[in-house]
Length: 351
Image 1 (cartoon, rainbow, N blue to C red):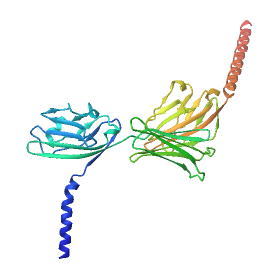
Image 2 (image 1 turned 180 degrees about the horizontal axis):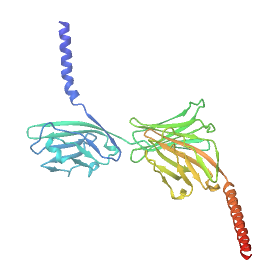
Image 3 (image 1 turned 90 degrees about the horizontal axis):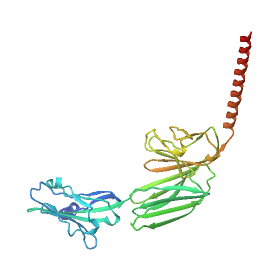
Image 4 (image 1 turned 180 degrees about the vertical axis):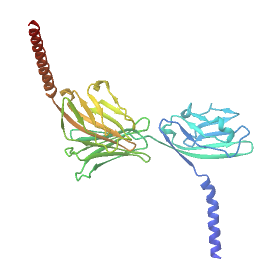
């Protein structure tokens, strides 16, 4: 008897829960400033003109979209959604009442209701809209201070530091977070650490509930380059799936490459100095002088991480001068031989 009662209780609970499960809100993740589709459908063909009512279930329940009499009825639409909403009208007859929302903003987050009514049927659905932004991270150093920053992020991000290989040094880092007028977040962090060890990589990771990205910095030892030709290494294990940017003194772009293509673009200012870029991303330069002394940074990015390798190069001048002197001496000797041969030929002709 007790078993039967317990079984009936379980059945009753399941029956009560089924409508709740069926009414579970759909969740939609939208990207800031991009278009997003909020799904809503009505089972079966709709032969007659449907009444479609979209509402944002925030304070005041503002009207998002209204459609009846075979046309939009937007005179009472909330200003927040003005000129940003549309239906797939060619699919209404098949029961598709999904709403396309353009230029998604932070204030668009929240719960939405979609109500559809015809002469003999009606349905209400609920959709939760979550907004996020891609995460981009910038890392650089001046002296012994490394800074990491990311701007225009949502939801609120977190910044963490790590090293490869792990370091026993305790980092004194400071992190600040501020919110913009658009309700996005800017985050900045810095730490003081020694960059004397060329085999250590310092990384910062900026993460939110939905996205994360890491930026890493490695400094190689100073190298001496020839004014005739110099090769600067780029620390990478796989460049076939990555974008590549070489910079001079953190600002001037030397060459850039997007995606797996072997083609790269050389900036006008560096065309006379760039000889090529190897498959591994190494930069080959030519015809250099002390004007090209400085820091060369190789930035390689894939879907998850940006890795920056910095090298300080000093140009050893003199090789081109030696070549010039050598060419001059050879030219003088050649001219002298030509003149000697001419005089000898003239003497023979006089005889």
